[in-house]
Image (tube, rainbow, N blue to C red; front, side, top):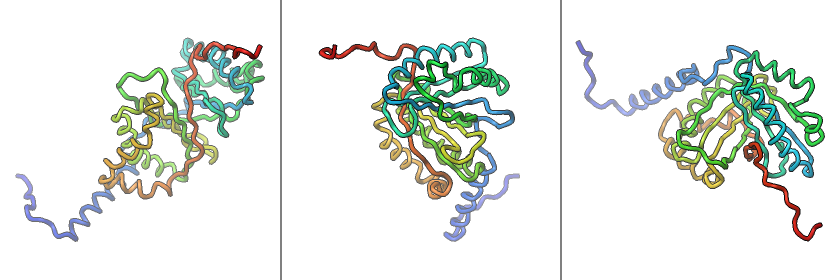
Length: 281
């Protein structure tokens, strides 16, 4: 026997209570982890991120070093099965953040020992030649907590946007990412401007410079230029979702953002041949 369903309209006061109850239930489900994060922290961290600084005069040579020596070392780690994948990113302009970053994703936590062995002889993964050009600023042990990619073919000149955040409550922050940010990011990919996103949690957060780090891969410079317009368009499409709206209204109390960095990927032999300007011989 089927239960009888009410066919008459509810009074406005009850409709409000019903709506508020549904919103509260949805928020509680999100906080309880109804939408699971990508990686559970059931082992040690498998991701290592390292940032570097160098003098402006050494930037061209350091980039060439990364293209040649650093990538050769990382490729060997991949062939050995220790490293699943990596990114070598370079800041195309001089800023107050950092000049370069490498992102290492190891197959297991235990094989990160391979990197610790490398560190003993080459701090920050840099040989003596590399250390003459730059110095490691900070090394982070992290968890790749969320990631996703667009099925469309990527561009040969993607733009990477790196955004660090701090938060006060990890559980609340994870719920906020699931309910507020991920729906937006999926919208950006649907719009065709974003290739991929990777969101990292610092395994040992101590505040500045970041507890979480977002790395967005935009298709190309033109797509990155559409970032603000795309954000506004997708947010407009989500504003009537009560759960999304709840997190939008309180996001300023959940996390704080610090200096962003626009980067590009370093690949083997990516630098153009060096030519001396005519007339300067």
